[in-house]
Amino acid sequence: MIEYVSKHYDKILACLLEHVQITVIAVAVSFMIALPFGILISKYKRLSGAVNGVCNLIFSIPTLAMLVILLPFTGLGDMTAIVTLVLYNQYVLIKNIAEGFDEINPAIHEIGLGMGYSKVQFFFSVEWPLALPMIINGIKLAAIGTVTMGTLGATIGAGGLGELILMGLVMRHWNKVIVGSVLCAVFAFMLSAILQALEDRARKRAQGIG
View (cartoon, rainbow, N blue to C red):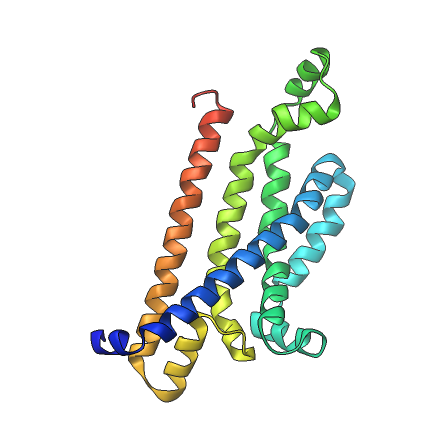
């Protein structure tokens, strides 16, 4: 194991950086798409059934099947993997964003309006800080899911740590499998720890503690 890492650290590092890049892009794009939808269904409940229905339908499709479906449109490589991850992430992100705003006590809205806040001022000064802990929780879940599902991107040439795992399985080179799996787990754990710390900090601020 140590010998393999010492001889191929450049390849291992390249795969890790590819995985980080795919994860960051997928989660960032996912959040930008999910945020308006999450806010929308929290304000207009009649839309939640349609939006959640579409998200549930997408989430029910197996990852490999989704990759195959998208291949004719996005081709081999990173784009197909990223689009697939973005589609799957909508399920958890939209749900958490909507719940974050739904948990705000309606009385707070009345108090804010009574104090002369405009809707925009009230959103950024009151609603956003209160909903932020749940939103970060959604980002955390999406990030962890992206790291793990991202390994399947190697099946369509997206690279990343999945390439080490896939090639190791094909060649029965178990050092590759172990290194790829361990790095994937460590990366997911680090992301989880960082986002959990941000979530805890946001929750303390929302409660007026921090």
